[in-house]
Length: 195
Image 1 (tube, rainbow, N blue to C red):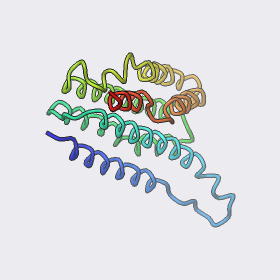
Image 2 (tube, rainbow, N blue to C red):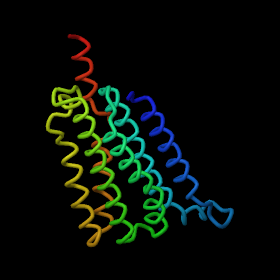
Image 3 (cartoon, helix red, strand yellow):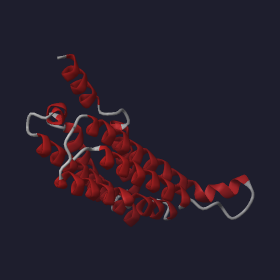
Image 4 (cartoon, rainbow, N blue to C red):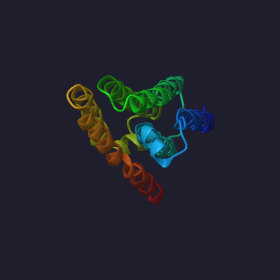
């Protein structure tokens, strides 16, 4: 099976997720600029979630560019990943509307953690479909960034119960780690095309 439908479906779901997130942002009650202060936490939560969804979309594109085969396992792994991404609007809205309270911040971290786990499973499924000598396997290597992200999410979830702002800082740190598309995949593709 080709990967075109998988990419198109994933792009569509991601576009819907972003649309739902922005629709969750309600305008303030009032007409003055200082009325906007009440929605600042919701807006900040939206920005963080938008960046995360953008990072996933970008890296998903790069990952699929390095692969050729799609199996049933890959389809289910991709759906599993999209399921966790689809919870971003809920977790983001709850965290923002609660002004970054403890429990919503921890739940947001849990959604981030599970999305990362699901992405890791998707990578595994794609590598299994193409074999251990696959371009993706070579490009990812030990995947220290992926493993570090999982560890940081776990740390942040625990810290959310002590200091939600510290947990938020870790969520932002992980996003910064991933802002630049995965250069490992780009390098592996260029090296293979050169040989």
